[in-house]
Image: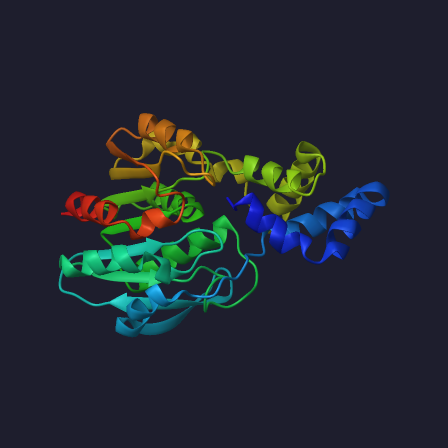
Length: 287
């Protein structure tokens, strides 16, 4: 879900945090698990690069409160007369990362809406989780949709698949760089970065997560419902993605009956969003 180098740089800069986590591991594992969950659900903020600024200048801005989670999200819209597309970015990202795909879809006549996930970009809060993103997608679809298509990236792809699972109005979904077919391994991998027992703390974090958000985490796993997805699906992944194993997308393609897969090279996890060939393939698919 997050590049290890970035996570290490971010979380280990204040060495007191790493030390505190290991001390809590020895004297109070429960508190250690709470601290880990705090960081796990707290996205890293990155400055918006110059290449995304034109998209922001051309977009109409609005904000909307999502009642289910009591958070305000920032929305960007490129109006048009065609079918409506909603784009869902990934963890530690922002809506403007879709600037290239959004522009090409808009040029093709689509009405394009992008939003910053809770805790990301200009949206409110410092925290976020997958179930909250699903709530955002469902509420936006009801209030300013209905959307005909979803385009999703990374963790946003997990949320997009969950929205399609419960909503039969969507005509298609584009899934880019799916990080995993199951969410729990993300917990384990995250804990491992702190050099702590991954499975032990993943169990504790998941248990608390499910109690707090009143949801069975495995119910969000794409592998649990992929075979039931009937909408037209395009799965895109870079073969040398170091953040998200391409195997997840290959297996998803096998599970979703009405799906196509497009595998790229040398685009990694994020550069794939601004590749011309990828944008062209998406527009062709949607048209």
